[in-house]
Length: 280
Image 1: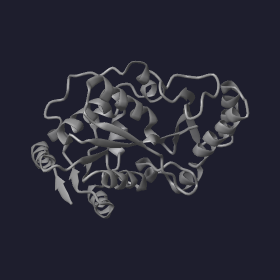
Image 2: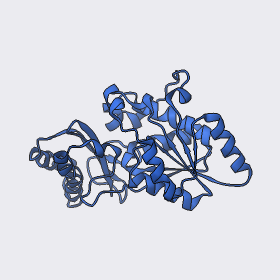
Image 3: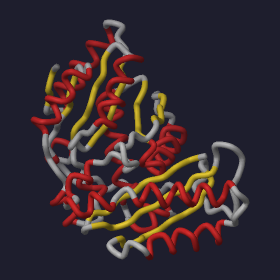
C-alpha cells in the first residue's frame, strides 16, 4: 500500500496507472476509520483495479472550530486497517497542501442545503463541495463510494457531479451499524461509557417513526411520538427530526412511494453531535 502526501505525486502515480489501463475506485474520508469505511474500500477494490482512500480532516466544512479541534486524527491506525481491506493508495495531505490559499469559491446547492445539516451548519456543504471537487480532480476516479449515513452529503455530491459534469459515478452504500443499532461513526469514539449505552436510542427513534408512518400515522403524529420517546432520555438534545423526500430532501406530510421516504435525525449526546437516517 502506497501512502502519498502531496497532490503532485498522487496525480503522477494515478495518471500512470490509468495510462496502463487500470480503473480507480475512490473513498474520500476524514480518517478515524471504522468498519463502515472499510466496507467502502472493500467494495471499491472489488469493482475496480485500484482502491484509493483519502484521509483529510477538511477544515472548510466545520462551522464549529471546537468540533474541528476535537475531531479524531488516527492516521497510523487508519493505515493499518486499510491494508488488509485491499487499499492500494492512501492520499493523506496536510491542510497546507490542500489549501495553500484559502478558496474564495462559494458553492450554492439551492434547496438541498437549506434543510437539516445545511440549516444547522451554515457553510458546511460549501466546504464539502470544494474539498470533494479538489479530490475528484486529483484522483480522477471512475467510481467514488459514499456511505448513506450522510444522506444529505450524498445528495449534494450527486448534484455537484451532475451540474459540473464530473466524469465519475457516485456509488451510495448502505449504513453499517453496531449490533445495538447505532450507526457507525468516527464520532462514536468520543462518547463516554454512559452515553454510548444511550446512543442506540437514536436508531430506536427512527424505527419507531418508520412504524408510525407505515401504519398510517401523519408526520405530525410521528413527530409527537418521537418527542415523547426522547422525553424519556433527557441526556439527548434533539436538533432536528425530519421526514423528507429521498431525492429532494424537502419535507413531506406522509409516507411516499417505496424507497423514497427518508427519516433524518441530528442530536447531541455527551457534547457529541450524532446523525442518522433510514430510507424506506
